[in-house]
Image (tube, rainbow, N blue to C red):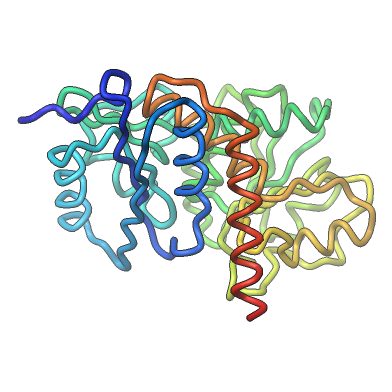
Length: 293
């Protein structure tokens, strides 16, 4: 089976993203800007497929293997579905059963999770010391898992999980055994009650959806509130948290930090944070202009 083009040697990279919906993604702009800053060319292709089943995903991944990709990202709703289709998994990705970054080397596909490392970086920048005070995570799917592992690895001693599918919370609690104290809440509001922080790990709030993952009335000024959604940047949750004076962390931080880590995995080169940040902000401004028009 032919080996993929190695961006470390060729100074070119073919990259992509599998998911749905992804037309709004700022990742192509970020990854291509980082490549230019590092002195080489990259092309980042959106592979937007709705309702892909196992055979569909396997065919797409085989194309990635054969067509010279250096790697791809994976987003909602396929972060867990691709796991059994890969040749290898990095330890953290294997522990949580979710992948958002796949590298290609010598024809082998290896899954990683830079949502975890990216969120851990963003959390550290908040300067929090939550200790044993619980942090609520709403949503226990692919990104919720990554955020839970990130927090557990960043000194947060207690996590309170909620998902409409309780089975997902129970499975995640088992994965996190020994890493943090886990509670499973009966509702999103119950998860947020008395929590040091609240993280939205669901797609709720992603345009055109305008829902909140929990009632605004449960938010408190003393809490920090984060969203994994960045389209729009100021989701209903972010606006509600800001309006009461809570510390907010928009999806911008996760988007940029996970992309920085993914770029290094794809290319072996260090990504320029300033180049990625500028590209992200420009892409979001363009999306906002399109929406207003």
